[in-house]
Length: 444
Picture 1: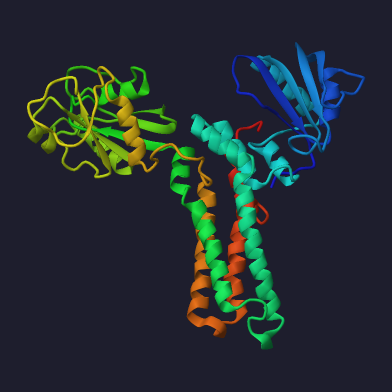
Picture 2: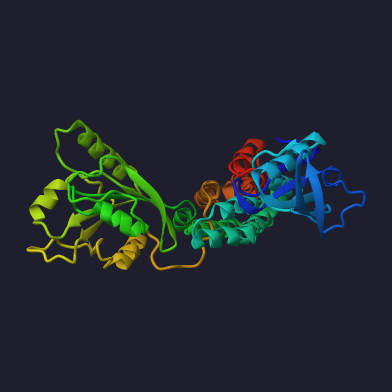
């Protein structure tokens, strides 16, 4: 684990040219180091923005410094934030000055880690900070902010409190072995455990949608050459990213971009046309298209609505079954029907809104609903394991009744509590914390 006894420093805004940039200091020497950097004799006033003209190494600038005195700060320590002009030269000079005067360069996520260790945030809320920073769609931002406000924390705390009450009664019964289930009858214990399982499963029922909202989906466009895959790719993207020509086989490799489709973060992948070819480059492109389709969350099978059905079917044999059929070129009359599918025109944009709704439906999102309670894979795994432990306890009681010693039930219940506490961070191994915070950006 990182040391929390020293003072850390980092640039807290994206690198590059900008109007403003912020350097953040946190730790016991943050105020002293800021005083030296700003060449001030008077201390900064807590929670007041202070204008200062200073020279950092050989670089002068006029900055605004704000001191957040511990414990009333994001990290729970003394924090100083210096807002300067957004020149990388200026910001780097401020950081070098801080390092020269006793600070240490912050590791990724170390400011938020200190907030967690100092009791300012629990672990789900700390993870939500990174999710909010990474959000690229409104749905992702809403889900992250909901977790940052403690919605998941409160739900887990309620479940754990109910489980703790159950454990306490069973442990009290252990002290009176001659009385059997003294404080709780086996039937009541089984019903109580079933109730806890039901609450956990209610959280998990939002997990599939939550994973898609948080992590997004990969959608691959597949089909025969010249079906209009690249044109549809560009239409969904809103930009001319893929090359479009009337010559079949223009796309030879995978072309991917991230796009917001109706609030869902989608990695959209355009692929080479599925066809038999003696050209080794084209064959490799078809192979990559097939592999991409196999690993995608959804395949849009793009068919040319203006061509006979038999040639389309032959060309698309072997496409992954996890697919949504898209009938492109609906602005052109077609001699025979292709069957069911979403009719669109990549040229005119007709049917695109319908296609986006169908993509949501096919991915299991359906109509826009409340913010999902669970979005994090770590949380999903721990909740599933906690539910499995409780299921084991419930099955044992139902099978054995009063002949089952309370100690056997308590093993499974305590295991479930341990897993719930790993979500909240009450009992979380150091290697898990390092893994969680290592994905944060430096300065957060």
